[in-house]
Image (cartoon, rainbow, N blue to C red; front, side, top):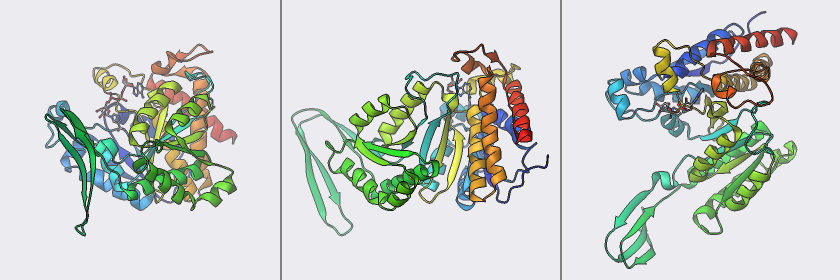
Amino acid sequence: MEKIKMTTPLVEMDGDEMTRVLWRMIKDMLILPFVDLKTAYYDLGLVERDRTNDQVTIDSAEATKKYGVAVKCATITPNVARMSEYNLKEMWKSPNGTIRSILDGTIFRAPIIVDCIKPAIPRWRKPITIARHAYGDVYKGVELRTEEPGTAELIFTGTSGKNVKQTVQKLTGPAVLQGIHNTEQSIEGFARSCFNYAVDTKQDLWFSTKDTISKVYDGAFKEIFEKVYADYADEFKRLNIEYFYTLIDDAVHRVIRSEGGYIWACKNYDGDVMSDMVSTVFGSLSLMTSVLVSPDGKYEFEAAHGTVTRHYYRYLEGEIPSTNPVATIFAWSGALKKRGELDENRQLTNFGHSLEQACLETLSDGIMTKDLADMAEGLTPVIANTEVFIKAIAERLNSILHSG
Ligand SMILES: NC(=O)c1ccc[n+]([C@@H]2O[C@H](COP(=O)([O-])OP(=O)(O)OC[C@H]3O[C@@H](n4cnc5c(N)ncnc54)[C@H](O)[C@@H]3O)[C@@H](O)[C@H]2O)c1
């Protein structure tokens, strides 16, 4: 079979530890035999980030802006322990944070639905995708703890010199205070990314805040979403999808009782909490995909999990790993499908679909890594190490591609 040609390179961001090992296996066994792969390669492994003073991370994000689609391997976010383990010059920032701020994107996290892994909420038959606004609110808050009675005030000084002042509270004793903010530009970018992604994936978009209590702050989120929706309303109608705003309390009720199949846009904190709830209900972090979408339509695909450090240390000691590569494979398939779509390269898009089908069929046959075998229902799982599992997927993929 002739290899599938690509016209535009995919931005490839390599990573760390066990996922770096998976990355190589996935490329060698599932991509390179079938696709004449063109990538702009950036090594975001911690060693190279340290060598380049993190310039490589910035370059990879700029390349994503240029080419439009990236696929990223999980990477270490350094902490004190990593400083000595890797003898780092500096405690470099999280690459995901750096890339996100350059692309100004929103993260969409969706579960991969597998027949034999039943969600803890049986009604959830379709994926629920959480879109988390990744800027501001408590994550950029300033806080104070006071020790005496006094008056807490909120003061804004405009560049024109205009002052606006509000009393937060007259305090009769020690207290805690918090100042948070968001910007209209960031909220609008969030809204655009959400509407674009809904159009892209042809799914309804739900959005929830607590605007009955927070009339100005959350009220602004609601209002900006409504304003931006006006640009998408015709497209939504054409695709027969819906934009639906509701209070966060009501959203929680509806989500639990729904069968899934929509995007749930959440403010920063809500998204942080709800994405953990959704991934737990669906079963496993190793079956969650993640895509960063910028308001101007640039995409970065990755697995939602980290570098699986414990497996890596055991692998270095000679143990054969049974690390689950599915979410990383779906990052590749998602990126190839999107590249194919943008380049009108039907063969490449179809290849991405076939790769996903091969993964799901292999799992339905009961062949899976150890983490899933413990959760599988309705079949007797055959536990495979990573390499054997990927080989089984490659065989499936070969027969799917040849039968098509
Ligand atoms: N997107 C990213 O690049 C990203 C995300 C999270 C963590 N990290 C980094 O990853 C490293 C490890 O972090 P962590 O341990 O908190 O998160 P982790 O996702 O690597 O592991 C969390 C738990 O889930 C299990 N797990 C995760 N993915 C799995 C898979 N594919 N197969 C089998 N089991 C799997 C692990 O064994 C572990 O028990 C840290 O250095 C952190 O900075 C990177």
